[in-house]
Length: 217
Image 1 (cartoon, rainbow, N blue to C red):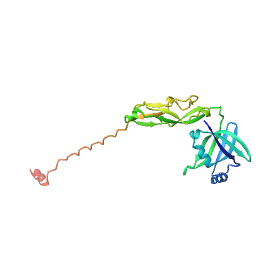
Image 2 (image 1 turned 180 degrees about the vertical axis):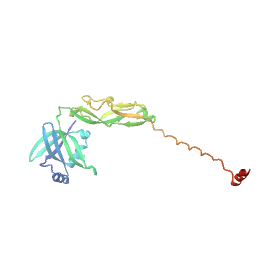
Image 3 (image 1 turned 45 degrees about the vertical axis):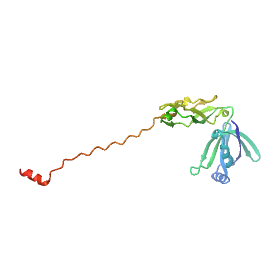
Image 4 (image 1 turned 30 degrees about the vertical axis):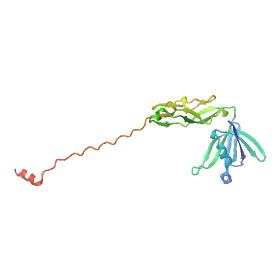
């Protein structure tokens, strides 16, 4: 996996006033932490970061951070650990970078991509995907953009579990192997509306004159 070079800048404080000012300048407050790295407050250009995210690996991309501080520069290998967004407009408010080593295994979430059309779906079944990603452990350089899962042979009632996913060499499954990934469920059958029971017919009562005559007799 290729590294994405990204220029970032140190910042002196983590005050709300400073972070607000950075965002007004089109920059995103960030922080770098990890093994052997003291938490380092940073800022990154918003447009540059948004562009960097548009890569095949998405959030699992490996970044080479060029940290600039008053004319000096340091480099770190890192991955995005967390992105905080504004719940109203989805603007990025803050980024957490995690410093990593390319020779040490890490745990990451990998998207699962379903391949093919199952026999059960062709027969009217409904595809139900329970998990869209799985957790694996591997070296940073071995992270795939996604993992394909062939569902062509699934019949109605069949399922595939996390343990059924073919993992590339070097990847170890951390998600529970018994977790269902996809199931082909039977189609829903609409029940016919119940017929209304016929109303009971009451025996018509005799006219008042007939009742009176019957009483006299």
